[in-house]
Image (tube, rainbow, N blue to C red; front, side):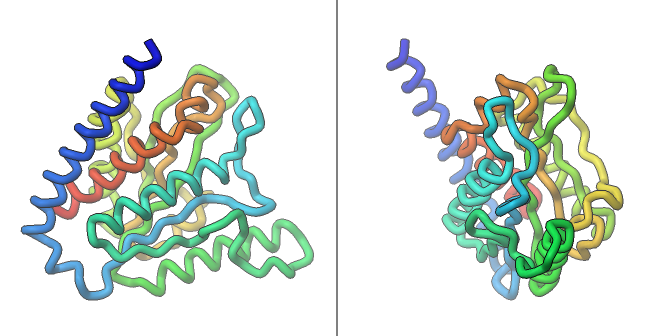
Length: 231
């Protein structure tokens, strides 16, 4: 049984690789020439350092899953020839950590992330997070988008559709515009999305989100969605 399970995973990854290659070749023929001048994929691994984000029942912190998925996104986008920027590369807040209060450090962190993103004005921002709810039954990824750039909604729909098609066929969640509570996207002038990859409050989904293979499948789905949009 274990050998069969491994074989199924291997077949899935091969199929993903084939689909990814086909999508990239179509994309490369049509649009890569338009992306040579200053276009970056900006990848934001939410939280970090003293800000762990939410957590699973076993204590697994959101910040660590966010960074792991973000790193896989970074590798995949680079493999496709994109320039990338990781807003954080380790377990840290990236603002002024000498400030005296935790709140002040968090505010500095999110404003620093926004400032870095705005320094790449022809780019796309992808923020990676995990969801949590008081009722365990809820599950599934959901993509949110900035209200400031019309392309954000189109990108969000392409990524949501790719996630559903590739790994979550029963997911019927709809994309949504963020409100003022999501500072980074609400104030970002770039095409930007936030991927809530799943619910750490759902034990079954939390186990998937902690799994390296599932994280790769999820990252592939996000990249595939971006390629579909750019195509």
